[in-house]
Length: 242
Ligand SMILES: NC(=O)c1ccc[n+]([C@@H]2O[C@H](COP(=O)([O-])OP(=O)(O)OC[C@H]3O[C@@H](n4cnc5c(N)ncnc54)[C@H](OP(=O)(O)O)[C@@H]3O)[C@@H](O)[C@H]2O)c1
Image (tube, rainbow, N blue to C red; front, side, top):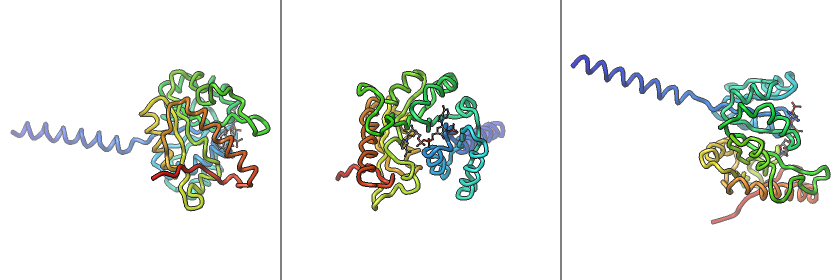
């Protein structure tokens, strides 16, 4: 009998340990381009979640300044400043490419091996220089091109229909802005949905990765409208429904 008690106690200790470990496991998110408009906005908004944020930028001083600024608002934020894309991506569960579309190919060369099987979030809108067209063919999208470059990663489109300024004000004119998600891996999209919620937006899973063609064109339209009607870069999409 005492022996059985000991076995039970051991099993309970193991279960408790596994539970604690799971509860303490944070997802690590690399933000490549963390000091840019979108990278910094995403970092600030995700700092309120239970994530480890690996902030990648070229300028260590700018990264340290961003980290210090985020810590003022979120003293418990788990942040690390890193100046190497491969190192940040190696440590990450999720990689967010907050860089211009044109820079993605170069970055992919650095992170390809460490991005295998990981979620890579494409936020890019492949705009032309005059902001009146996309430089990708209508038969593809920035997200699909990224997936082609990273065939073993789970590319998910997200955050491309939200402006950087929206992250500080995701409720615009009394309505929570929608943020669309597209991808080919259901579990990856569910994970990204949580990130989008943490950032303060209403997540909508819109379709498979080819839906990114529409999402990227939607943001081109919003940019055009914003310039025409002076939305001051604070605008978003909202699906009205019952
Ligand atoms: N701005 C918006 O409201 C908005 C909205 C939706 C989607 N987006 C998309 O978000 C992405 C970023 O836009 P942004 O407005 O944040 O641009 P940004 O302010 O110019 O920041 C881009 C960042 O990318 C990094 N970068 C550039 N070239 C790089 C390279 N070759 N290797 C590594 N890092 C590089 C730069 O960081 P370092 O100098 O430290 O390398 C820079 O901080 C774009 O794809 C854009 O289409 C933007």
